Amino acid sequence: MTSQRGSESAHMNHKGPCHTALCSSSSSSHGSSLRPPKSCGGQSKPVQFSTVGSSWVAERQTGLLTLLLSLLWYMPMAGGLEVKTAEMPQMVFLHANVTIVCVIPGLSHLDITTVGIIWSLKNEWHEAEVPIYEFYGNHLKAFRPGASVSLLGLERGDASLHLPRIELSEAGEYRCKLVVTPDQAEGTTRLDVVAYPAMALFVKAERYGEGQHIICKLDGFYPEAFDIKWERCTLKDSRFRVITDGIVIGPTVKNDDGTFSVTSSLALKPALEDRGIIYHCVVSHRSLLVPRKLNLTLPEKAAMQVLLPLSRNP
Image: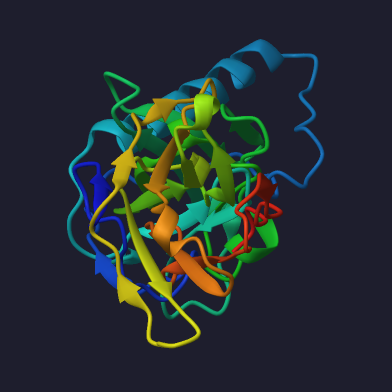
């Protein structure tokens, strides 16, 4: 008997947590020719203003920056500049670091004083698209703590976004908007966050002599969809056979951090409680490359015993 929960497939055949396939995303229009302040990216010293007219110069620079960022947000994208982002969704484990790809192909050197970047995120936790990171000239702001784009990489046309210790709420569609004066381009890519289940398998004796159960417990997994199967073999028959009777799946519980926990129990029949019977709890989940099997050998008299939980790291 198979225990399944969730609206999506519990197990997907993919090539690993950070597998990406690049594809072209759109590009540009030849708008007004904006010229940034004569500074060197986020690495140069602040522009020094003269005493006379310094307020006017500062206001003009602020106006240019505001105009550029407005262009990045609102102007349509078409035409000359091209960026590439990940075609397939990127998958990352909860609390791991991730790099979300956005590159300008075919460039060996880029003058970053002519470049503007806005990274933003849209997902079910936010009603509107929210800014994550922006850069232009001497202006650099990370709205999400730790968000960064390598300026050395940007000189080679790599505007990929680096995010440390990703959270479940940061899954969604990421948009990379670029201006290389006077051209514009943008690309989008999907980021999925998963959590690997901690697993344990043990025998539990019921009170008042009501028999015994083998408990398969999963804790801290995400997304919710999962699949649990039970198998057994004996010394006389080494082939594992699927068990369909005596299985009870408990309710899926949502933890405080947004992950899930669940237990599946298998009732033991007294006539089968012989030494040498091996039971498998077979778990499938999106965070697993292949289904994982937890093994338990039933002793002559099944007593309370706990196998060490498996690590959450795949």
